[in-house]
Image 1 (cartoon, helix red, strand yellow):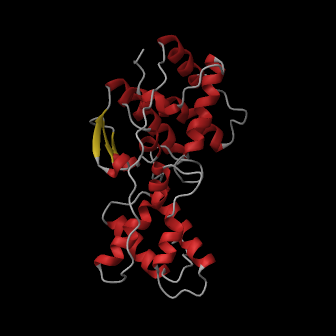
Image 2 (cartoon, helix red, strand yellow; image 1 turned 180 degrees about the vertical axis):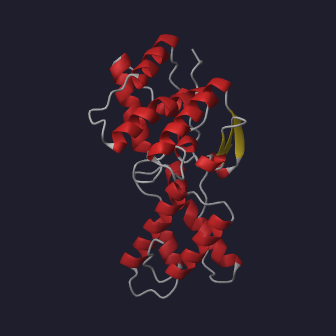
Image 3 (tube, rainbow, N blue to C red; image 1 turned 90 degrees about the horizontal axis):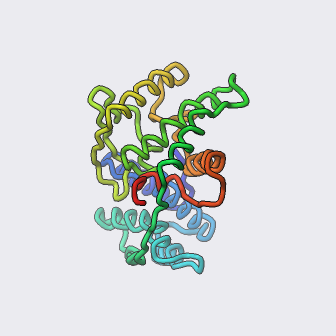
Length: 258
């Protein structure tokens, strides 16, 4: 377990355990930001004996570089932590104010069929420099399947990255998505061609990572990062279509908007 440093570290540990047990923990967001909050309090209030209003307010105040949306993302876990303590009579600190995110109109890139054909051809034709390195072999196997999954199912990149092996039913072709936006569980049914591709991938990866936790897993036993997704998407996009357009991997969820 991550060693928390603040004067209320024991409460954080119980809070994290509780959220994980209830299936309502998002490690990339909550795990990172509760650790940053803990470090902030330990560094700035080294003589503290309990969580205080000043600690919460100082951490949660809106920063110059933030909009409401990014502030809410950063402070949400602190509000949940304070609520957790208040319900148990462990603090009278008021939770931070929840700011309504600004409206954002996202316009995804409109792919055409030739662009997609060239992109997936580049993914399929990738030849690693080091065939004996496990991470190179994993990239060769993973890239074509990962991006086709986004394209064929409309899954978010985070949902695909955090997908657990046990949550993919390769018999019926159903994916149980538990790490999602809003953290609501839902299901995705794969096309038969995608199910067959996922099955082939699963069998190939099982020879390299026989006890893996994540469906798409690194050689170090972790899920892939956001940077891995975008770096690889950009690599194969530039190779196949040049660097004049600026789509991102997330746009594969909306392939037919043109």
